[in-house]
Image 1 (spheres, helix red, strand yellow):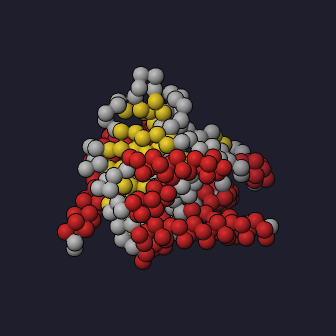
Image 2 (image 1 turned 120 degrees about the vertical axis):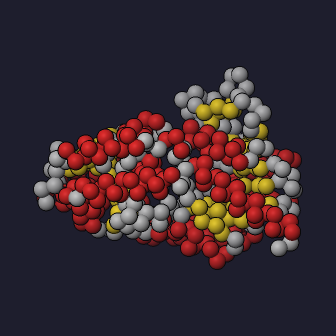
Image 3 (image 1 turned 45 degrees about the vertical axis):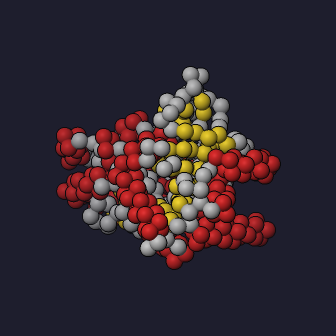
Amino acid sequence: MRYILVTHIPFALTPDGAYAVNELWGWDLKAHLDVFSNLHVFAPLDLYDQNKFPYTFPKGSIYFHPLPFLKNPIQFFIKLPKILHIFYRYIQEDDIVHSTGTPYPPLGIIANIFCLFKGCKKRIIVFDADFISDLELRINSEKRLIRRLFYFSIKKIYSLIFKFCIKTSPLTFVVGETLYERYKNYGNVVKIYASWVKEEDIVPSTYLKEKIEDISKRKEIRLCFAASLIPKKNPICAIEATKILKERGIPVTLHILGKGPMKRELKELVEKYDLSNCITFKDPVPYGKLFYDTLKKYDAILIPNLSGEQPRIIFDALANGVTVIGSNIKSFSVISNGVNGILCNPRDPRSFAHAVEKLYKDKKFLEKLIYAGIETVRENTIQSIHKKRMQIINNTFSKNERGI
């Protein structure tokens, strides 16, 4: 049986004919291959660049079907007939068709709806980002009425599309608690977690012992914020919390790893609060070993997200012995407050400052959270998550075939 994956993430062909993808997608596809050997991927074909597409698969391990590479919405509408023709020609009625619910380019959404009308009965749609919540944040922050009405219209349209896909699909995967609560009543919706951490990436116990010894000797606590510098990631909260900690006499350093439209505003805020001696801005670190090695240097990570998607960096941090101080919203449900991390009000920097102060003053508590975090990520590696998904998929479609 073929497992079809329709996605907007591009691939390329190397000069020797191998398939090349970005590193994160390479890890994900490798985990797919571990559970589904006959894997076919429908994705946009891009020009090969070794830096952009470092992860390669030999031909025959995965079957890639090229879709047009879309640079803008106009190209999407122009090339939509060609995309539909490719789906019609190559997707078979007995395939398992896994489509991503990305809003743009909506290749997975188009494939999901197309396969409904073609009669494919084994359809899966996956939503891993909270696009509706992001639009709500945009609407609330937008001052111009016309733009607010525009984003409100987009929200209504996509909300209807998402619900239609969920209602008509035999199986829907959503990442995190927020999306599950929003869509659980519209069909067969299953909550999953998203992790790119491989079993071999989790730091060994010998390293943890050394790290905890170092923390107990140090007089400062080391924090990081690693995300795009945009409103929904709430980087201002991290700076405000650091200001409060400095006022309380807690020796703290904060590294902000990220780029985005808020960078200038954030730098001005740091200067205004006279925090240049304890807050440093750094460029994002490429995901993978280099990113993990960078994370290891910190004692805790601040994730004061306002939006509803479950951040994958939760698992990255836990796997590297870094305590998560995150938002007390549903998408952080994998974190139990005071057990394997700390949850705070993302609109109250004082709660984040209080959490950091507690970790600084109670090193045994910090040690407990680090070890509990390691156990959490062991249960949520990319391999284990794909195995759980495979069991759910097999159970769902075997029941359907028996008419249960």
